[in-house]
Length: 578
Image (tube, rainbow, N blue to C red):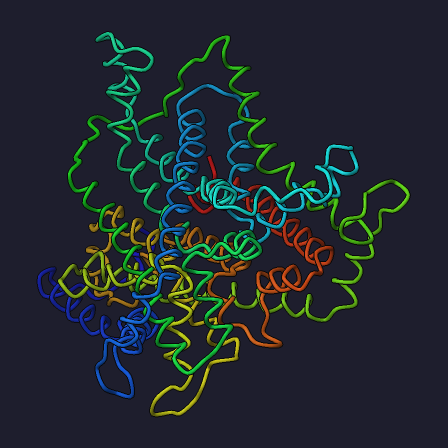
């Protein structure tokens, strides 16, 4: 209210509201320009490349791609690995969410923090860690005498191995969405069901599960779409086994060049995009058929007493965390300490030479850290600046146009990263009118990051604006404050925690991104994800492991700093905060 008291110049409410609406209408076109450039224009350019040859409409590319058995084999592989991986994510993430949110297990904050780490670790590092853990060349298993015999196949080089790691990588997505829904369950409804005789499985199946089904469906859909477009895990596990998914098939076609390669990969990108859109549409359809209203006030979350079973449940949860997080990282560290890949690690031959090499000798590592840091910070800051006024207009001025914009910002995130990368290549390889090319520069990666993570930064701010009481803004408007001043003095301070949460997620996600930058990088413009992938692909496994260990340390350090600072920050700034 202090901000409102500073405002002078009373204007009658109706007149001032009309003036405010006109100001919002004038603001909207300026906000549509970046959304149009980074979200809509690349997708339109992608569609044109696939259906036009030499400026003439043609179905040749579509016929050639859809008539190739390789396309359908990769499509089947993508659906199988993404589907099986989603089931694994649902089982792991759902079980953790129900137990952490609804029961009286101890050390919940630590459990949540540790469970979020696999999501923040890049998928290529996840794949590298598991590959170094298993197989006959594992430095860790050789050190303890448990390695398979030399010549044994790597068990993760298979469809099931890819699905397993996809499931582990994306279990945190299901956990976050479902846990947020579970924490809103009103205690009185659950207690009423208990008094009516609902116990155990019946209480869970008939009461809790239906009430939380929107979060469960949303998490499942997000996990499937993310797994479908994942490039790092299928590339590092599938390419050595000659097992292609749609993202890796696109990558291999682009690497092969050829006169028709852009047209063919455009069709492949549209195919994988169509599958992703079908998944999103199914998600909205399922949610549209469900309308479970939560009656009563939402107070303290449920705290189901486990009694004598609590210790057993805690042991199982920590054992799962150790298995999916600690043990693979130990395998990665062991590989980074051996003098050469395949050598048995011992107290007499461990060495930090690989860390010295990547940190102080090879300039590509420092360059990759610098590029990733600048891109992620720049994307986070830019998106916050765009999303604050954009979210305001979408929430406060709902029209068909703003509803369309709200849907369009989801497209680059819902579609796999390789689709967005190809769209950016086609659009920015030669920008019309100004005749400038962004291809081969950090600029094209930056624009792709803006498109990819726009919705991540926008949604928290929109939720914040929708929860704010309009009376405060109306009072400021009645005192003569225009749109800009209301945003600066009233709404921005109140929405700052949500904007900070979105910026934090953008930074952590972009810092280790690979799926988009794998197709957009060039010499001197490597990101950390690209560097690790290229080192491993070229056979420098020890160096790749050393870089991966450094990245993991940086990620965990940043997450720890944010967690410690969360006590002094408004609630909601740190997304995983309990």
